[in-house]
Image 1: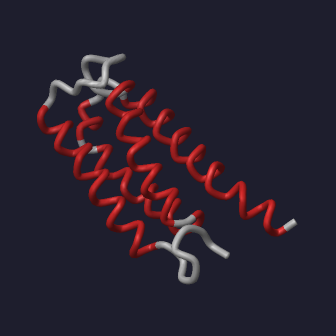
Image 2: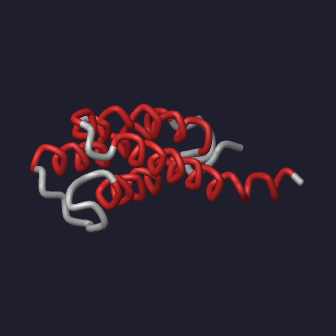
Length: 114
């Protein structure tokens, strides 16, 4: 039973990251605060990495950046981000959350909490 639960940790953590980023993107699309939200979202990704493992932090950060780019930044519905500051903040979100995922991940297994 424990192995079954461990198997679902990764997809569940990624699903939580995607749902959280989609919700934030829907709430703050077009808001002036949207430009800094990727930097603030690093905290969420670090918490997910802490509870679900490094891979959730890494895969989640890339997935969240794609969701933010597609649903929150102009032109909405496109992967292109016109605003240079928003584009840079998305990049820093990915780089920062991947690096911090390794710091905040639980000790033991490098991929998931055992």
